[in-house]
Amino acid sequence: LVAPGVYHERGDYKGPHASGGGDEAGAGVMITTPGITLRGLDRNKVIVDGTKPSDDPACSSSPGRQDFGPAGADGRALGRNGIEVFKTDDVTIENLTVCNFLDGAGGGGNQVWFNNGDGSGVSGPNSFHGAYLSATSSFYGGPGAPAGSYGIFVSNSSGPGTIEHTYASNQDDSSYYVGACTDCNTVITDAHAQYSALGYSGTNSGGHLRIEHSEWDHNKTGIVTNSQNNDDAPSPQQGWCPGSTTTSCTFFQDNDIHDNNNPNVPGAGSAALGPVGTGLVIAGGRGDTVRGNTIHDNGAWGVLTVPFPDSETPPPISHCDGGTPNVLGFPCYYDDFGNEVAGNTFAHNGFFGNATNGDLGDISGQNTPGNCWHDNTDAAGVTSAPAGLQATHGTCGVPNAGASLADPLSAQVICDTELLGPCTTFNYPRTTQVVMPPLERQRQMPDPCSGVPADPWCRRHGGSGHHEHGGGGHHEDDD
Image (cartoon, rainbow, N blue to C red):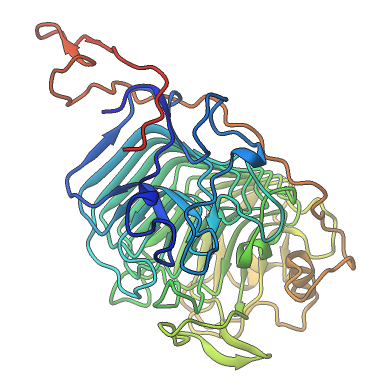
């Protein structure tokens, strides 16, 4: 239980990643003991701050205040993670803020990280819970410079896990991330993602997975799930229930996905290729269900299903599982199929005005089953590319194909993402100056003393359930 204060935690300077040793970023706070609950008494005033200790305001954007992490063996700064739960079970983190932990030569940049074996290619049971968390950064040094990478990050976990009542922003990859789990058993609910390259990113994550009842706005792209031949092995991204190729267990449902038209956000790596102005993208994914969402005011497309041509050199752990090697010069190519987009409400999407912009877009090869689209509504009429998508592709579980790679829709998507380089052929907004809005006050945990044994901060009065909060102050505790 943590009193209000600003905590410049530096556990990574004392552990195996101290200056001159190791090659991976450590964490300011590392949890390796099962059954721990780390809880702040005030979500907005308990701040785990990645900047250098100072009496200046927390989460400073000043370049001189940033802490890029201890030096690795080659002398380069390794980067830093904020609070990391490493390969341990039944840990809860709640009711606090984490900011300005930046990436570097050894990775890092994760504000809150539930890490069950990142890069191992293996996922396993690992129960976790995050609630009433705020994760942000105020610093961006420009392309290739250190930045916050992920707000709340889950890797290689098959759960069960829940992330609820949270907010994340200003990350150069994504505000929320779930990756490297074929059966994730994870729920993200009541989340709010803003001002990041991607609001949500999920690489090779599927099975039992729900992203629901959340808001995604003012990102470059709202929600992206994809297959990729990287260290989040094994690929592909597959939403079908384990053992099935017909029944989906991955749901993007009941979300408010709007105004994701912001090019002036941090961006790095493949996340920077997210198509600006797009609400939700399935890139090389299969078996996902998109239902019951309200998707509006996205300038390019509301929902877009596309292949993912992976151009990165894969690490030794990855072998293009589920993909096709050497297609169009790409080391690994993942087609998208078997996805269902149904019962969503659309409004005012596609206002960038390019020929294929609108509510729905589908690029895919001939597959069994193909993607299907039905019962989506727009008061002004559902728009799609190819045209009439709900009429031609309204039946699920049957063979079909979307637009081909030679279709104008493909040229539009490639231009929007700038996959092949700068593109001014069509009308898509480009970065002028990255803006990092400050964190606003967020909703508190109703009773931070719930379940806490009586102590000086949580004094109980008889059986009334009344609590008094004491203690506090400004803290710079490196322990």
